[in-house]
Image 1: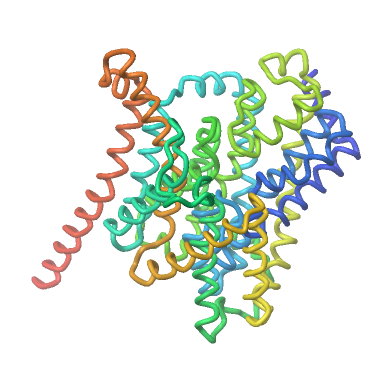
Image 2 (image 1 turned 90 degrees about the horizontal axis):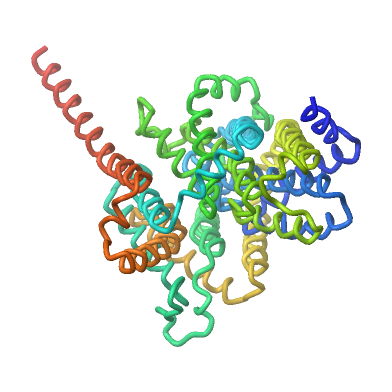
Length: 507
């Protein structure tokens, strides 16, 4: 009864208004290339300083929820992830838009985001203390193997040549080593440039590798980049619900993966969406349709990255360890107000905690009407705006978004350079996704390996350090499955095709 009475606090006119404002603001900011969910939360943090802790939490959580979802708009409509967590949404979202199903892709993204967000909130409500303790079991070695597992997903994510996928990931890993080393402070591959000391900024590289090639192709080709159907209205809810029902297991699996990954501090939505996409593709009867506009791919990635919102709050609120970068900003804002996190959140400060969880639930539900409404106008805007206005508008947003990350013109130059490189590589069959995956996972793998190596040297047993823990062995087993399962499946498919051809010849 106490939990219910605390939750009713989220229904006050003020908190409902803050949830509505936060979701709408987050969607708009998240949809702009370069303005990530972290930036959306950071920009609006000062607005919450005069609020009570529960109201501040509700607004910041709503902004976070909206921004993670908003990144899917540009990912689907212009092949540019608005946020890093929307990387995998481009795999099938943009191909759907190119064949004339962009409005369906936006509708699917909205439905999946709501489902994923609700699963994450449910986990926050029911499993927070238990799951937070599991997160503490992950040390440097476990994070190293987790990064390796992420890199093995390239074999499932690569379109066409798996070898080119691994080569692209190697290039991304090389980019991740530029600048000052994560541990030890060694300066690497800067060629004497002070600019490169800070390394390659992930979001800048993301914009360059995904957005600039699209802009070049828009300029180089006279026809429209999206097909336009006279019957398209921007919302295809009935059709979207049909796809969601067909893929209900995919939705729940992806949301569960997103929640689990977000509990691990530093993992984030980009890893969650990639893992869920890989699992959706592996479980599908026709995996070859993924990457060509399969609606289940959009459902998987969007369910996972919105589930990271609730999942990321579990270690943030219970342990004071941010699960994702936006959680770190929100935690800082709460500490400024004198709010302390810890196990007593669900006892001493239960009124604040349960009011916030109820507010996050309401914000997630608001995604459905707001997302469909804003998505409808975003879709119509993209398909009707002339190229002469679309290209400069996107180019301006990419430059401003890149510059705003660190207020550095050097990041803009790096973004443009990587964009041209990405365009050239794409012409030879090298996709940007493995490159970005290597760039994101490189620092995690390096830090975990070096710290694990130092621990092994101190303990006198490298083998037990890297291969002695049950969590490490589980992740290693998953990595082996991730590498070899696609090969076994492809071989089995070739054998079936050969048997079918032989049967046809007999007939």
